[in-house]
Image 1 (cartoon, rainbow, N blue to C red):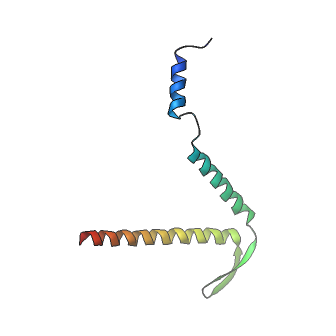
Image 2 (cartoon, helix red, strand yellow):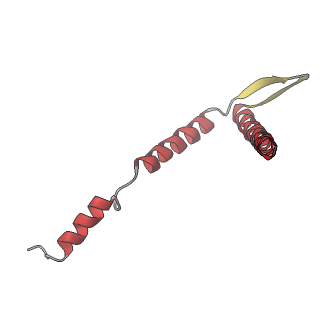
Image 3 (cartoon, one colour):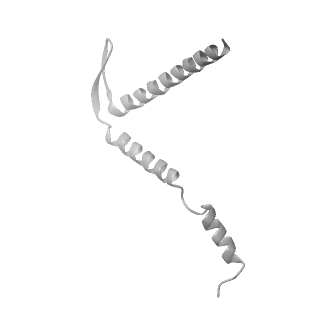
Amino acid sequence: MMNESSEPRSAAIAASGRGRFSPRLIGLAIAIAVAVSFFFQNGGRTRIWFLLFSFTSKTRTAIIVAIALGVILDRVFLSWWGKRKAAKNAQ
């Protein structure tokens, strides 16, 4: 026998979406799993040429450095763009 008072509550939870995993969370978990897998599969050494420098490094180290440089460039560009917009709006 089902308790009548619990039925509306469970229906309300199901209708609100609570109690399920969101598609965004599942997508994020899959992206993290793929990134971790990619990271550990690329442990070999590779030759890197950057401007006038040439050196040998692990591929995963090169990937981390490339990501870090990308993040830094993104922050610098967005900061510059925001200041440019603010100066243009102030005129």
